[in-house]
Length: 153
Image 1 (cartoon, rainbow, N blue to C red):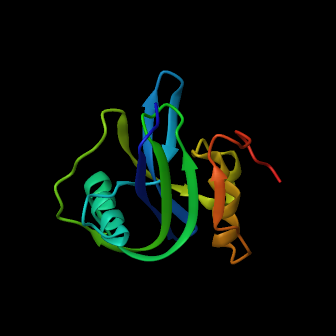
Image 2: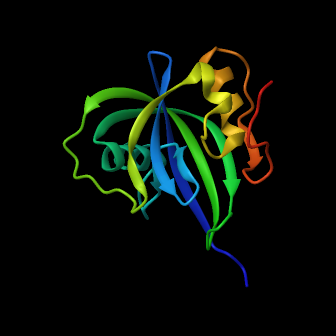
């Protein structure tokens, strides 16, 4: 059986040395993901990421350039392609909130210690740190399932 492909737009919102992250909880405890989600038919990716961030966090953002692409299918019915956009923080949004059942809120994670934070996919940690420090970072990160759970270099 072949899997469908799902395009997902994710937001990298950096403010005062911290990045916006969605806090989730499961049987293993709290962990974080980037805000964002699926693209609707007829919706451009920048509009999708702006809508998703507002729905998940109540924060308004303006999508900028795409900075990372990462793929995965762990625990999902479809093969997911995440396009990560650098987004500008605009302030509070008046959008109606829609959160996932295991979402417990959002936080601003310190980028300086991101290498040991429970942010997933883990392959995003070092590239986000490099991008924040204006260092080179690869755009295509490959499969999210291949990567160290903790990156310390």
